[in-house]
Amino acid sequence: MTKKKFGVCGSGTMGVGIAYAAAAAGYDVRLYDLNDQILAKAGQTIDAFISKGVERGKLTEEGGKELRERVVTTTDLSEMSGAMIVVEAIVERLDIKQELFRKLEEVLSADAIIATNTSSIAVTEMANGLQNPERVVGMHFFNPAHIMKLVEVIKGYATSEEVMQRTVDLSIELGKTPVRVKDTPGFIVNRVARNFYGEAFRIVGEGAASHEQVDRCLKSVGFRMGPFELMDLIGVDVNFAVTQSVYGQYFNEARFQPHLIQKKMVESGRIGKKAGGGFYG
Ligand code: NAI
Image 1: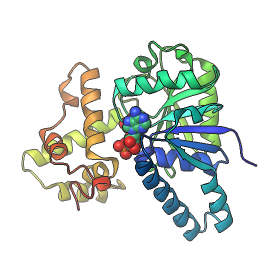
Image 2: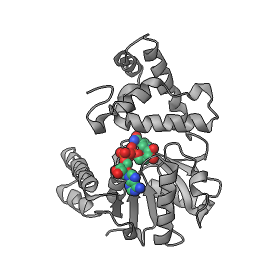
Image 3: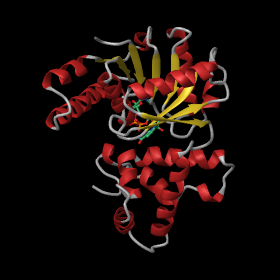
């Protein structure tokens, strides 16, 4: 039986994974983006996830078909009406996210949760100015979102305890491992990770080693991926936006300083796997 409606805004790297996880848990998913072309690509990605799941014996053909039918793509935000939660995974820009939230408030019922998958923008600031800021919560998935278990559940200044608990419960229902955290710049993982990337850039920037060497070294001591491979997966642009945001929120503390290599990569369009290549490829 299909469960209640689950909305996802943004059908890029993270949105498709979140939509897949919700559909796999039996939710009736609405996946929203700016145009049909982007949504068609998202649909293909979900098809590929399903094929892989079937190949690996995690899904039956029939189960995969049903899962796919539960994800409906749309460019019409009013289709979020009746959703119990909408998870936002659009571009990492405060003004654009706030504008989306204002529109969502017009469509959603008063008890629906508005969750943000932001990597680094303050949940508190995003909620500021909304009619019901207590329903805004951080639900920070990790890439690839349909596979990685961790979800940081972030309490903004106004987020109610009831909304926190419902988001924790929902994360568990999606098969995730939620961790509660207060709204602090970078939350837990992205704060710790700033130095993982930052020191790697400094090593390469000084010419002490190549990015391939840095990645090989870290993998040899147990990391699944090196920092440069991981940035290609995340999106060098997304990673750069997060670095700048965390740096600013800590009042430009030197230990969080972005690196010129990041800027140059973004300027040249070498932003990672989603664009055909970054540090690799
Ligand atoms: P992406 O660039 O792959 O996808 C963003 C999508 O949002 C695009 O399809 C774009 O068309 C759409 N979009 C942009 N403005 C929109 C609007 N006004 N309304 C509807 N859709 C809009 O980005 P990605 O990587 O999926 O990141 C999305 C969010 O998730 C960001 O806040 C990012 O910081 C966060 N995040 C990213 C992670 C990653 O590894 N890439 C990990 C965890 C969080």
